[in-house]
Length: 349
Image 1 (cartoon, rainbow, N blue to C red):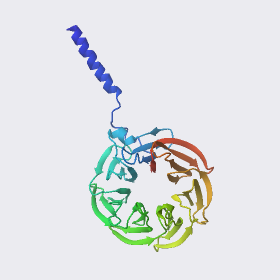
Image 2 (cartoon, rainbow, N blue to C red; image 1 turned 120 degrees about the horizontal axis):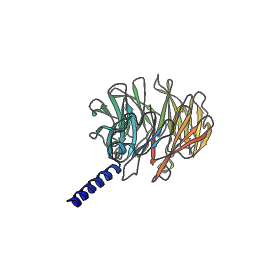
Image 3 (cartoon, rainbow, N blue to C red; image 1 turned 45 degrees about the vertical axis):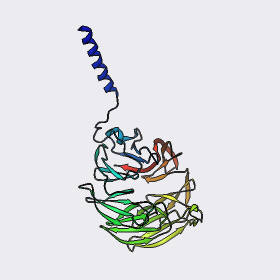
Image 4 (cartoon, rainbow, N blue to C red; image 1 turned 135 degrees about the vertical axis):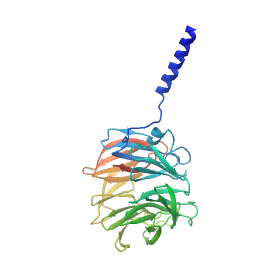
């Protein structure tokens, strides 16, 4: 009996120790991921899951795959983007046709939206209980694209707004939503202006508008132009829209084979990517191409408070990186590993 008791006790002790040693999902401190940078990593294109990387604002802490760490489950394929509203993060998972909702500070799961989405791209919240999500629908059908209007009290789609094909990124100004139609698997050249649940108007810009910033009463739209493989290559351009009139006030053209991307802004300066370099432009005295300040092929750029955050997707199959540059010297000051294909940079404040 003593031997049996000893064996039973030892077995229970072994099981207990084994369970303690295994990493278990569970609650983090309520503000574990507050005040830092969140990077959405798309993940492998056809299989696997995207992830989210966290870097603290003092650059002292880096945490990988934080959604799975907290909740014990994957986000899905592909993690396209993320947006915030109040205390929630809305994580858009495009190939899985869903939005995963988590507390933006603890990253504990709150809810999900899995009905009514086909190929969601980007989320934007407004000042109330409403959110907007751009959706390609069937990417091979140019007639079924829409912007879904979300009721954030119930986390359900309250309405859909039919729009031109290829809706992507959004910005807001004076209670209106401006949607760039990059064109999905094709090319487009429109900005939709949404008020409430209606497309109020459209603004024709140059081909393939890929990024936008609001500066004062102006909307700057960076258009990449049609790429050469389309057989109808067009030059990239920077389009300035007067938001009071809704009219294009200036169009600045690049060279015939130049296709810029990743427009971002800090103070009065615009920054963008072109042919392996980052360029700087004064928004009040635009003369293209501006000054090249940093070399590198970057997937995404975000400028903020004198720093430039840039992701490098590498070979698009293994871990990428986040590089941070001091814009007063244009020198790199940090380099952090991310997940596979780091496609979005967000500041959690």
